[in-house]
Length: 310
Picture 1 (tube, rainbow, N blue to C red):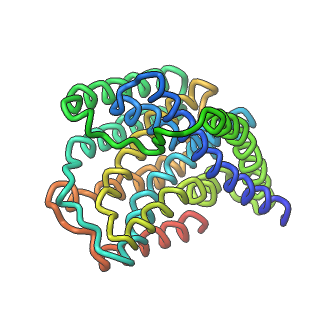
Picture 2 (picture 1 turned 120 degrees about the horizontal axis):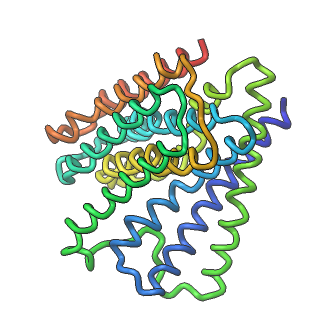
C-alpha cells in the first residue's frame, strides 16, 4: 500500500501548488483584462481556491467513485469548521467581532439546508446541480450589488500588478496541467486504499481526501494566527463552505449522478450541519474563538474521525 499512500501524498502536493499557481495566473489575467477587483475576488479567486476540491470531485465521478466526491465536499466543510478554526485557536485567540459575517453565514446555512433536501432524494442528479449553480450565481450577484460601493478598496488575493507576462502564462499552464494530474493521482490512490482496507470510498472522501484538500486553508489560518491576523478566518471558512456545497457539487453532478449512501443520510450530513451551527456564537454574538473553543472544536473533529472509521 506504500505506492497508494505515496500517490495520495504526491497528488495533494501537486493540487496545492497547482491550485495556487492557477489562482495567481487567473487573477492577474482578469485584472489585466480590466475586470473590477471585487468581481475578480468574488469569482476568479473563489473558484480558483476551490479548484483542487472541484477537480477531485469531478475526477472521482469520472472514475466511478461518486461516494468519494460527495464525501470530499461534506468532509471538507466539517473539517473547515472544526479543524481550520480549531487548531489556530489553540495558538492564539481569534477575534471575530471586527468582521460582520452574518449575511454570508445565513447564505451558508441556506445552502446547507438546500443540499440536505436534495440528498434526501437519495441521488443527486443534473437538475440539482443546475439549481445549486443558479443559487450560487444569485448570491454572487447580490454580494456584488451590495458591496460595489467599496469595490476600489478590495484587495485581491494573488494580485501582483508588475507580474511579467511569461510568469503569468507559466502560472496558468502549471495550474491547468497540475490540477488534473494531482486529482488523478489522489483519486486513484484513495480508491485503492479504500478497497484494500474494506473502507467505503465515501469514508475515505470524508476523512483522508477532505483533510488533504483542506490543508491549504489550515496552513494559511495557522500562519495568520501566529502573526495575530486570523480575524478573517471565520469569513474565509464560511465562504469556502458555501462554494463547496453550491459550486463544487453543482458542477460535479452535471458530470454524472451521485448516489447518497444511507449512512451518509443518517450521520455525516447532520454532523456537517451541527458543525455549521456551532458558528452561531461567533457570527451573531461576537464571541472570540478562544483556546477552550479551539480544544473543543479540535477534539470534536478527532471524535468524528473515530466515529467515521468505527
